[in-house]
Every structure is written in structure tokens, then in C-alpha cells.
Image (tube, rainbow, N blue to C red):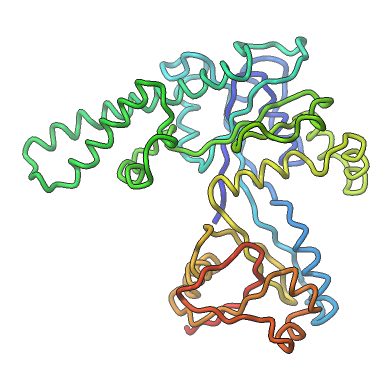
Length: 362
């Protein structure tokens, strides 16, 4: 499972700087003028996970590492989408082509300007609250266009359909969605899961979960790192870009000077997982230590299917232990000898941080 995150904002709010920091290289063009990003930049970022290195140490001590041993973290795909402007839904700025890129992502990150440097051209930005309203409005206007087209088609089709035709339900949800958008309401926050499922095929922009990133001045980070809302993260994109160019020890010193516990990007990635209800389980052996992503509450066979569909089809059982307990026991064999390894079946869920060995038949 590969998580995809779209970085959206007005021009010159720090989207490309944030993207560069995420990828630890200058992939996107950061420039002090609108539309510096012409095509959406897409890149894959490793998910920071200190558990992997600790599991590697345990495997090395107890089993030894194979000649081609690898640590394989989970990954997130980030899409840096060109700056939207007021009127984008009707073709202003670079228009509709960029709205279409947002359809493909799992979660939207709204990057809002909250720094004081007036040397950076504002390009339509006023303040975080009004900027967010502009961005959401443009996405909802595009959705309204899509909904009206689908309703027009459905209404024609349903003239000759039976009362039991499931398309009636889809049409009813679309009418409700149209009314909500006309009131300026974000659909993901105002439709239930069953309703969202009925219109899932339209890939409406406002049905996606979202995170707000306040791009702030460096001096505000330490005093303001605690978010005001559950879906809000405050970072300094330029600081994150500077951090990305340092080695691990230099990063620790820099963070200590700033008075923060971890990079803002780590917090953002964790927030994306939390927002989408994702967890990470782990596998560890002489060939590799690896992180796998699945939905929170996923049953053991579903989690096995993340590794390979054959694992889910032929699932027998899973042997599991929390990673900290495994480290504390000094490895898998010791944990098994101490009765710490638990065997779970098809009806039990995999939890975040579990180290797992699946048993399956071919």
C-alpha cells in the first residue's frame, strides 16, 4: 500500500520548498515568482521509523545478516501541484489541468502562508484563513461542475429505470452533495462513509481527507508546534529544507538549537498516516527488516495480502509480538522460548508495531 499525498496551495507559499525537503534533494524548482512549478513533481519519500534499525540490531546479534541484507521502510508518494489561484476552477492561472492531478491522491495537504517575509511575492495570498477558503472553494467549484454533469446524465438514464435501480441512491447522494457544496461545505466532513462510497467513482476533490500545514517563520516553531486543530501541523519549510541537507548528528544539534523534538516533516508524515487510518506492521529476518502499511483494524489475512496476494489466499495463522517486547526479549527465538509470541487467526487484527511471521499454504 503506497500512500499518496498532494501538496496544494496558492503560489509562493512554500510548497516546492517543502517538497524539496521531503525528497532531500532539489527536484522541484523553488523560485520567487508564481507558477514556478509547471508540471506536477512526483517523488517517493521514506517514512522515518526508528524501529527498523533496532530490529536490524537484534537480527544481527541473534541470526546474523545475509550478504544482501536490506532495511526497507514504508514510503509515501508526494505530488507537488502548481499553485492554485482564485478562479482556477474556471481556468484562471494554469487552471483545470492542475485540479485533475489532485484527483489521484489519497490526502490533500493545504500549505498556507503564515510567515512574515514580505520580500516573497504574495501572489494572491492574504492570511491563512482566507487562503484556505479560496483553495477549498476552487476545489468545490470543480466538484460542482462534475456533479452537475453526472446528475444530468443520471436523470436521463433514470427516466426508464425501475424504483429499485441503485442509481437512484447515487443520484440522491449527488443532490445532497450539490446542496452542501452550494453552502460552501467540504463533502468529506459532511457525508457519511456509506454516502461517500456511493459517489466514490467520481473522485470528487472535496471527498478527500485533508491536512493543514502552516508554513511559519523559524522562531515560531518551538513556541507553536502544538497544533490548534487535529488536522493542523505548523512547520517552517525553509528550515526543513536546511535540515534535509544535514547528516543525522547535525540534525539533532540543529533541532536542539530550535527547541523542537523532531523535524516537522516527520510530524506531517505521521499525521498523514493518522488521517487515513493507516498503521505499520513489521517483518524481520536475515534477508531484510521491512515496514508494511495497512489499514487500522485490518484482519491478519488482509495484512498478509499486503505482502503478497498468495499469503492472504492461503492464510493459516500469524505469529506476532510487539516490536519493543521482541527487542526486550533479545530476538525471536528467546521470545518464543519465553512464551511471548502469540498466534492469531483469521478473525484477529494486526496492530501497529507488531512484528509478524505469516503461516500460509500454497
